[in-house]
Length: 247
Image (cartoon, rainbow, N blue to C red; front, side, top):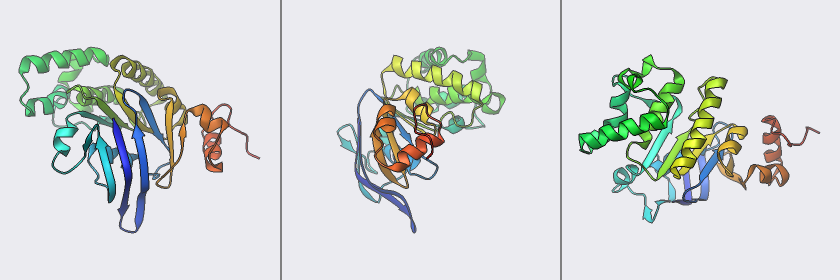
């Protein structure tokens, strides 16, 4: 579904991402994990075309992502950011259907899709008539997911989608999101700094540090066969069961 060949990014003197090769398999959930500033969000934004790499290419399916096709390819990518990223001057329903209306889809099709997504993410229809600031954080995130799924994309990208939520709401949404991922069978890439969350959503975990991929595998691989001491240190800091105790 996604392939990155030798992609890198620098902002002035700061290297955000060293040359990276990465393939994202179709129909599976992959988690990108690491501390703040490790390059995981930069990598995600490259996939959706919000950041252009200094070197290398990004492939979505069989196509190389370019300035000429990025808008079209984005229509096949759902993108969710922390707190939903909704426009405050639009109602929640208007946020969800904005791109579909811009593309001129039939009203009946839009209305049917809106109703189906409302049921999928368990948000009442009357909440969609409100503005984002009138909803809870969990509700806003559900609306953000609806907007990302409106065009039924094959690829879904989530950048720290649950980071701003309280623990109870976060737990509820984790459970709901996993069920949605399994039901829709889409290719999902989720960015998180929480190893427990990464292991809950994905068998395929990509750990990053200082703009580089340091290890890829299951949570058991990272626990039992760490590629470098930093991996064990990260697991200990996250208090992952089975991680080695500090010496």
